[in-house]
Amino acid sequence: MSSDSSLSHYVITSACVDVKDGVCTTVCPVDCIYTHPEAEQYVIHPDECIDCGSCEMVCPVSAIFRLEDVPPGEQTFIAKNRDFFTDYPDYAAHHAASWK
Ligand code: SF4
Ligand code: SF4
Image (cartoon, rainbow, N blue to C red; front, side, top):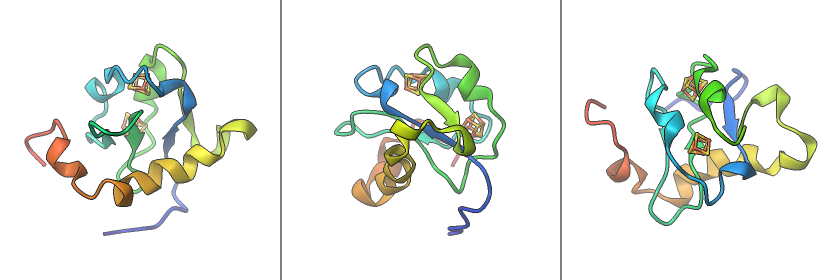
C-alpha cells in the first residue's frame, strides 16, 4: 500500500465529531471516506483521496479541508485521519462500499 503523503488530499476535522452523518460518503468518487462504530467521526484515507473536493462542498458543518488549508487549531486531525487506519484495523469490515 502506498504511503506517499506528499500528494495533497482532504482531511476531516473536529466539526465532524459527534455529527458523523455520512453525507460526504455519498459524493466521494473513490469511496475513500471511512468510519467505525467506535470512532467519533469520519476520516479520509490520505493515500486513496484523489483531491477532488466534492466532499468539502456537501459537509453541513464545514469539517472538511484540503491538507494545505487545515486551520492551525485543527492540525492534529491530519494525523488523526491517518492513524484511524491503524487504530481500527477492522475498518474495512465496516465500510459501506461493496465493490472494493
Ligand atoms: S476530496 Fe474527493 S476523493 Fe477525496 S475524500 Fe473528498 S470526495 Fe473523496
Ligand atoms: S459530511 Fe461532514 S459532518 Fe458529515 S460525516 Fe462527512 S465530514 Fe462528518
